[in-house]
Image (cartoon, rainbow, N blue to C red; front, side, top):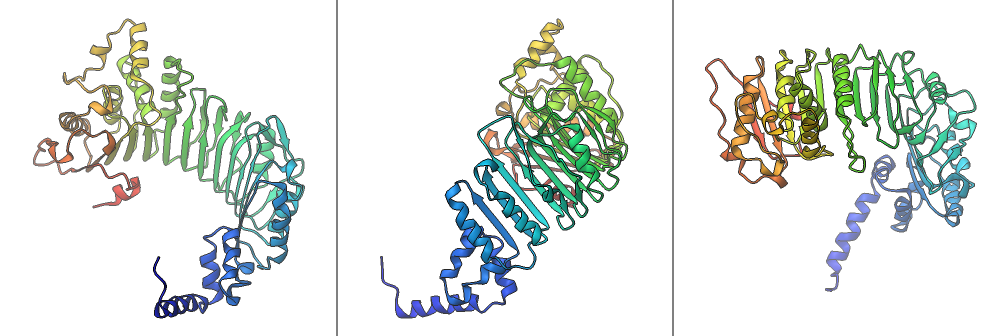
Length: 459
């Protein structure tokens, strides 16, 4: 390794000096993007940096062993910021680290606005007892609480989070009464996320009049809410397990995303039940103008279409489909388009994500004494690929033709393909010729970086 010349050494020192001469507010902003441990290590750079970290408005602590608790206590003793905008504490179960309540209280005493508590434990069936002062804050605006599975949240005091706008609860057991207690103390809640929250049966959000966004993810092991009453929400994202979920009231919805969680360890396909459930959900989503469906939903709709079950009409204007492009989604996709007369923008993201195996769908049709080969054949006689890996440029051309044929007001089509499964060049796709009065923009790409909003906003 070559020696650093004197000129290079002076250049490095000048660079460090330029950073050190920045105002404290700029240095604090830079250090907010680092962990607290790394921020403290900057004190070795120079005298100028020795106490800079003490006033940064962000604290991030990872505590996995009791022997590190003393250093955390020392860190918080030296911490002098008058206000903490962000406090992130990640730790093993609270029973092993006796100082956790003290650390949480430190965050609350600094009027923290963004609080994240992530507790992990290898033990199950434990009741998590958070201190009463945790449930009483006028400063917290964003709260994220993550626990190990089978840990229970039971607030034993009145909840008062009078400034809370965004709440995320993850991997915890949450009973209806506890959820009601929490919601009653959040008068300004705007965004609620429930990720794998067990035991919650009825999610009643009728009194949460400011709530606009609701996100729920369930799975086979952690069912989550079976009834949702949310008359004020505008945006709903639901990753649903193969279990019952009823939208009792979602009258104000303008945007929704829906998919079904498929668990390979539980291969039994409850096809009849899933068709009835998805169609009931569609009825509640009729007035939404922006919809996103996963591939499993479209597969279930395909089975319903093959069986001749009627679909509700939709008022959707912007539709996004995250799905494997194959014969198992074509009937459902076609019916969706036909029942969306106001559709203007359509995105199809061709990908394999948690998809139900086609052979399970074939087996279901055989139980109904139907021929899979005949059922999956398009109404115009075209045959489709069984797997995304078998997709050809001809299939892509047929897909675009199907979209154009089954829509009236469409002005933009975007098809994004997973490049890992492409066996052809996008440029080889022959786009169907349009009539003289059909001015539809068609974009075919393997670009995976653009969001749906970016694609819709493009001219």
